[in-house]
Length: 364
Image (tube, rainbow, N blue to C red; front, top):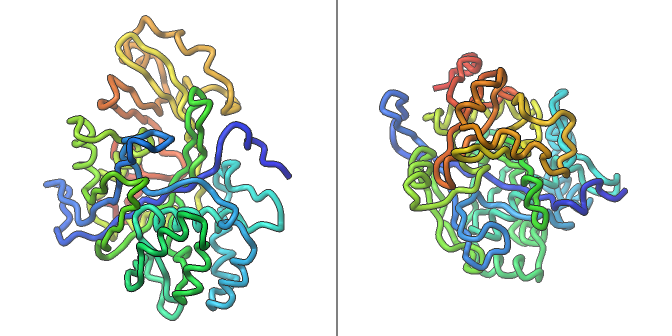
């Protein structure tokens, strides 16, 4: 079966990698005990050059081969453990998670493999699991091999990600990756659109980074708030999904509580977040699912016929007319404001930090 939207966009996967810091978390002083890994794309990158992003990239046929099933059996990963990753309890499932054929690996597995492969290709971060140890919720990073050589071989197509793990005797850590969100590039970017599954990975310490020189200008480990501040001060430019995800992370200061939240939410699904633009007199508004201005039964392909309907009104004037808000208001490329006045989609973190609904897992 040909993928329904293949002519409109590519599938991809990204990885939010968090590593423990030695600070004591404190909500009052806004002190985090973790940092987030991001990198700046090179000026020659085809899509969003010079932007600061999470590691990730395009889906590849090697991610979907059924050879992985035999590989995991040989690594004593049980079919039950893998099957559990494919079960989502009635939550939203964007098209990217639908498998084209039974001759291909389940998308809930292959997209995780894609995210892991890209993190290694771009930054040399190889997340692995030891099946002999109890699943802790945290990943481990393998660094005791010639990372640069293997990065080059996989980047150049001389070896596959599976061949790397076969040679090392290692197992890619699908089990400790948490489904986080799913984003689709807005329709105005007709020539380069991506539907991207985002996953969260958590480490107990920062690994050494090996940036791939053709794709990575520089990389950063920093807190969500510090990265957002650098964006506002125009020292870096964060792509829109990154600003959204870092903003909702910014209200959680303790990495252990974040792991508990991610584990609790892991099978609740991911509503496709495809921003729809409206022009305002003093900026631009991008509405998201659940907002009053979000088109009913949106097909993700059509342009917004009401793009300029409110163009003579300010962002605030447009906002006060709505009962349900889920939107990002842009004053310019570096200044955004987020609004959500309802329960977060998919029981996720609230974009304005109103996380009382998560008290059962002791959110900070």
